[in-house]
Length: 205
Image (cartoon, rainbow, N blue to C red; front, side, top):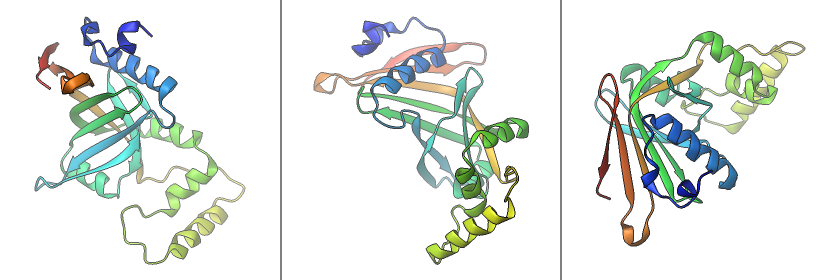
């Protein structure tokens, strides 16, 4: 890592690609953040504009966007199906940095979801089947019974990916980098996609 990155020096922004900057920040966070440096808050909204937010884990990032996985029948899954615009926020306390992404959500190819699901631990695979995510759970024992049921159902065989367990990609159209400075004179730097190139600007803190 460069000294500029370590010192929160926003003058480093000579890059035309926000993903390359984000990857630098994420790499540094993996060295300093004690747990889950790939954690982010995902904000979605229903068709009426009522927002909701929750924490997830980033699984892949490249120029095409940022990939995560979840249950399509969950609240966020249903909201993304009806209103495919969403926002992600990464915050690393150890670095005093934040990155926000805004863009359009699309589902990734089922084959890619199959590959990632197959790489998960068996316990996580069974858990995906057992949890009726976001539905009311009357007794914790009901969840435990579901775990036992699916563990037996897939005994001595590979656990297939549930059709409702899907991968999603946020195709970023706006990316904002924030770095903490003294006296609340923080640095904010924004990339906006114009349709054929990234436009950049600074914002007051």
